[in-house]
Length: 235
Ligand SMILES: O=c1ccn([C@@H]2O[C@H](COP(=O)(O)O)[C@@H](O)[C@H]2O)c(=O)[nH]1
Image (cartoon, rainbow, N blue to C red; front, top):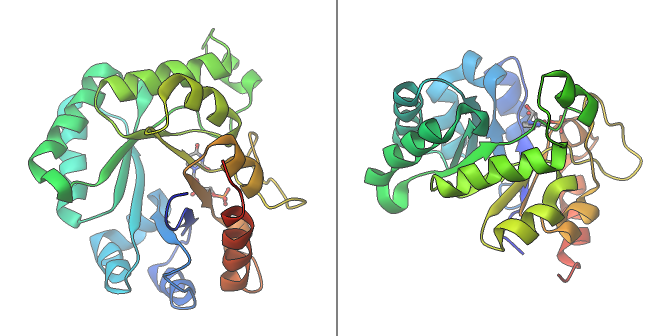
């Protein structure tokens, strides 16, 4: 299993609140994800503050724009030194290729580039209502193949699609899955959820968890318990 598979979503409105929480976390237990809300409030300074505290940062801005704009945006993320960055796979093959090509000059220092397939907050019915005629699983697989063919390293998907993606895309392709909920905990707005054990058993590489960790009484204790639970799984 991958080292430090839990990525904690720092969905905070204020950088100070995010850093207060981060200062209570043990960097040996997790990596961090900065999304649209916190990056809009805290910008590159906040990302640098997380790097200074020895955390790997997944910059989850889900770029989706014309190829030139997305290429420049992922290059800016590389300049920031983030560990992982993402784009929307529905931006199309040309956009995905432009993003991948933009990171080539950074060589081994390039962030891991992945693509969002179908948001974990969407059900099959909600996806169909947007006009997508393929079944949800088929759509995720098709978008993941587009990402792989454009040179990306993996996708954001639900753990519910992990088995089919592993079968179709092989063992090296990274699967990063939000919508992870410890057994018995609230799903909130997430529709396609799995527990950490179910997800790792299905072949997921990274588990993204926000509210269950941030709202727990002792985040380090919960992270340790989940890391211990999934470390026992042999695939
Ligand atoms: O399909 C996706 C893509 C991204 N996310 C992000 O992950 C976290 C999940 O937070 P929870 O509190 O554990 O629900 C959040 O930052 C989302 O923006 C996602 O949920 N689904």
